[in-house]
Length: 113
Image 1 (cartoon, rainbow, N blue to C red):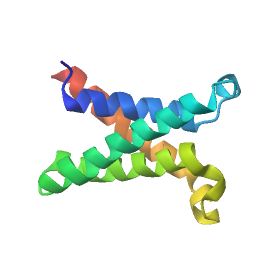
Image 2: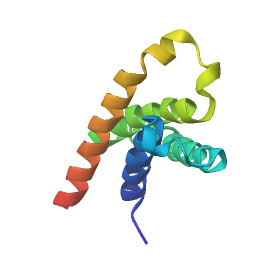
Image 3: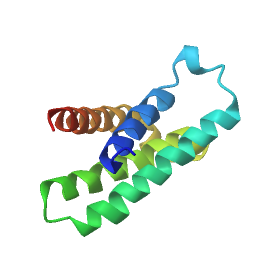
Image 4: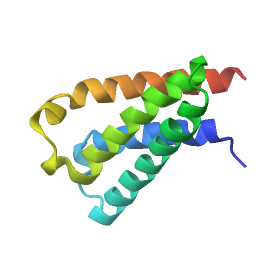
């Protein structure tokens, strides 16, 4: 069984790939994109609301809280991008770059274990 940190990291990368709206991925069925969005949302909620809040005084707790929030926003880009407010749509590149940074941080830390 994979540790939860590894699963969250995989979900971060998965969400990034889907949220980038690459031309190659435009042919994916809508149901698959929606499923990806729900998976990223669930991982983000777990990361921020369960692990992040329980361990907020530690580095990884704070990181989980922030990266979980970024995953939740990324999931909204996947699930309902047309209904988002303009400021959230305009901040998509910043959110995705920050999430990519956290994904790399998690991945390198897990690889060093």
